[in-house]
Image (cartoon, rainbow over all chains, first blue to last red; front, side, top):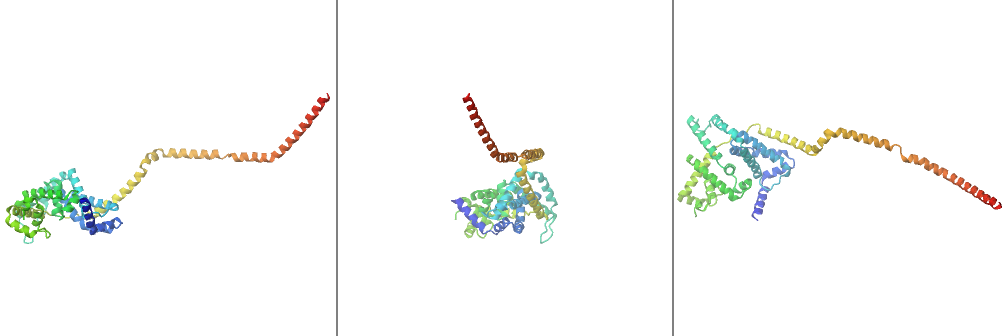
Length: 201
Length: 165
């Protein structure tokens, strides 16, 4: 019964989802609609993947694979859920596979290089000092390591909750788990992050 | 109200800490947080986490991302077509490549043999016989009847002579 209700709610959400409508047009052969979906979701998918795998090149490669799979699946697409749920499910699946494959181990040594090569961020009220830049870089590194230290599913849940502002229900559909499981993932993830980052307040 | 931390309603505090407009019971929760140090510490810590995460910006997307994606889509389309052909002709490839010619040659020889054997047809031979039989049969019958009459006369004559003797 609960499953049927969730399915019905998903179908209703899909019906109100303009992205799902665009995807139906892609299914009918409308390439322009695919371009619109790409334009709308490209950045968020890449950002999500970047924060998951913490490597921009890998993130863009995975994002391309995600959109390729979306396009490849156009003939069998059915708007049973929100388009972003489907899209992020594909992206999360690819990210988790990539992490398990250990692709990022080869690129970890580049993180320090990226950090040192990153230009200083300009702030509206004046140029940051070298000390401020170094402090900021150190804090960013702390944040990246704190997120990288989370188990993969906790990491995905936090990134979707914080940066994509997804509700628990949608995160549950993306991760193919229950809503209570998502709450548990987020509780443990944020507890870990608070322990590590709360001093930055 | 009951303390959310005591009853495990962290989601309520998370929503409150994020200052989401639809956070349930925000006003009541605000009064509780003001009096509960544990919840106050939780919210403060969570807000620090969010501020830290906000500072983590992603690099810009490569300028040729879309171009590369469409190229991959096209390559994938060509690959799918090749796979389709391979799936249908794949099992026949060894036969076609290694034994195609001999099979074709054998088939050609067989066809030629059938044609050659089939040329001297039975019906042309049978036709003249049939025609001859049809043409000759009445004469032959007449001759046969004449012979039988002659034999009959001869037999009567022979019996008569034998009787006289």
